[in-house]
Length: 373
Image 1: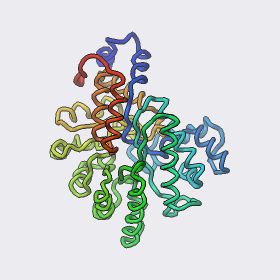
Image 2 (image 1 turned 90 degrees about the vertical axis):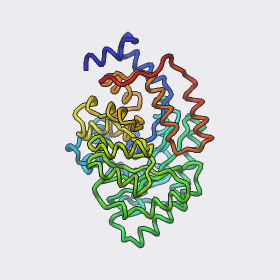
Image 3 (image 1 turned 180 degrees about the horizontal axis):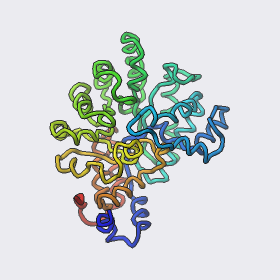
Image 4 (image 1 turned 180 degrees about the vertical axis):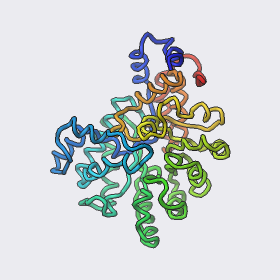
């Protein structure tokens, strides 16, 4: 660690100077969940404004609950704060407030393009809500347009399907719901650009959700699938070959199977790597264990993302700093990674061109370094 740290810092007088450089760097985040952006302060502001419940109104205590380390590799423990955070979405004005907070935080971290993910659990009875799905999508779309004007962050949204929630719905009803959701978001293409399968990874099979992704592909929506996070690499293969994934959420288990890495390389399928989330969940004991050098060696593309920055008490700048101190990544390397993330975004060609202009507003000298083994 010390040697890698010294290699990375040889151009900088301190970690603080490196942090400042990374903060100033225009960034892209392709994997950020809306619920996971909620900090204790935001939760208290939203709940107090709309008379919604919280387990405590003491910010420090609520922060400890939200960021509590889960039992290793246990997603239900990781998502324990969602039990009360999801209740904050029960009213549309609260939804608006949460979205604005999420985009404002991204702007403060100099994120120029953001893809926010959200799952409609409230419409299946998990969380009472006082509006229709169509109203939810319209509110999100309107708020995103306002945020783009107010905070200058190009923001697009991805609709998530939680495996563990939708698996409970009988197949005929599930397909009907899938069709209705795809139809609604297809009429909001200035905001919703993709779909995602998330939640508890080992619940259900690809066949349970194939109709949803077939409908999405027919409407020109991008497809990303959570796979290979806490379970094995086989789920990654299924996501690519059976569900048509262009990107994989996490996907770190691919390092355990050379055939899966070859598949990802051959299909040019991007891994959305979320370092702090993986470490918090106990998938890796340290950032240095994340198999980024192996992915580079096998020509598997990846982007660095935040996943749940409120839950993980992190930011994209901090994710980059941790990788710099662990692998020796320098800012030109991140300039390269951000340009690649732009290529894999689900935005239109016109938006990607605009994002490219924003990324190139700062050009760092020298070619990106290779990873330090």
